[in-house]
Amino acid sequence: MPGIIVSPLSRIAEMAVRHGCTEMISLVAKGQDFHRPGVIAKARHLTLGMNDITFAGTGDLIAPQEDHVRQIVAFAREWDRARPLLVHCWMGVSRSPAAALIAALAAEPDQDDAELVQRLRRASPYATPNSRLVEIGDGVLARNGRLIAAVRAIGRGADADGNAPFLLPLASEGAAVAD
Image (cartoon, rainbow, N blue to C red):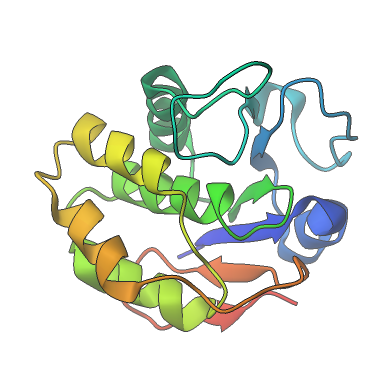
């Protein structure tokens, strides 16, 4: 079963082609320009304008909001799962791993939160899911604190250079590096 490819912005075209992705979620700062890879269906590309912050936001910074999470959930529930879903942010370390967890639980809500988060950690020693997205996702998906606790349990990921895409499997079949 296809999983979720988590990627930095700099590698989305490569990852989309390599893994046959036709659907993508982009979590980027409002107004950040980038080109959607040609293999991604325009109608199946969700772009969410937000900064990688965990506080309410001030000035030009836009914090992740409940509406963002609801859009991720709705998009993931419409994902046909014939091919991997590509999720990216600037570095592929914070916003996109959080969105991947939310999308995985939206697509397969019967998954165990702790096991899913452990698969994330095995797939990426660098992932540090954005805590604000995780907290909102936990509420929207009615996880009753399980997702928050699971993410806190893995702690902060290792320092990263933003060049480590990975595959988050939906089922407990292990994890794989996407490079």
